[in-house]
Length: 326
Image (tube, rainbow, N blue to C red):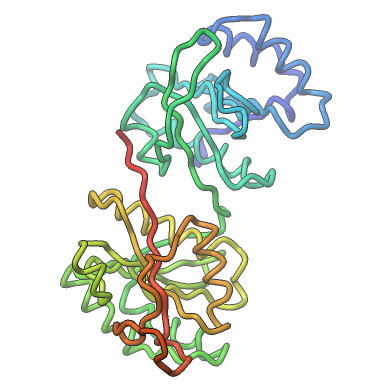
């Protein structure tokens, strides 16, 4: 965040209650609801709701937003919700809305949530921050709103495309856990990426290399080739960083990329030996289903009664339907 700005929480600034109430009522009306909600939250053991104001060094309010259990919407099975995001008109066009969205996303993750929701009639704004349209909901008077969902990850995770100077660091990291991933392999991937065949994405956890994935525009798996389905390939997360959400963050990025390239399905192939157990569970959790074609070995399908070798090349293909914003 800019050193000239600060985000204040009502729960840590209880003496500012009247200022918070006045601000939200001025923009969203209904003094009784906001005053009761904000007053009650100050002594509540529940982590929600949370209310925030974005201020400059002159203590002027630039904007505000809340994190609540439900935004007067019929989908009461979903929580928490980003609500009441507003930036004062003189300050618009400075990306200040993203500061509040990022802060609330990190707060929701810190409080133990893995998804953040919002309802809105706006199209094209929240998608810039990774929110995905998941359907419509209904308000008490019968109006409908679009519902968006953002998958949350630790703010310690950062993603970027591979750079050639990364290769030696990555090779050493895998050597330290007795995995053979030579620098030359990564440089070959880089050449593929320069030709536009793949996107080679790396992940860092607290600035330390943690894993990578390939977004392969043209799969080696024949059914994916025939159907024009892009593939998630060679997903690897270092053992010491597993169960930190890194695999999910890499997959979420590739899925969004597939949507941006107008695909309605994305696929992957996963090994069947026990070394791939964690990956298998992750893919099912993220909504991937077997493609129904059975097992294959080096892109050749196995038939009833055939024998094969159980190694890294014995795989099953899985696909996931992707949701597009409308």
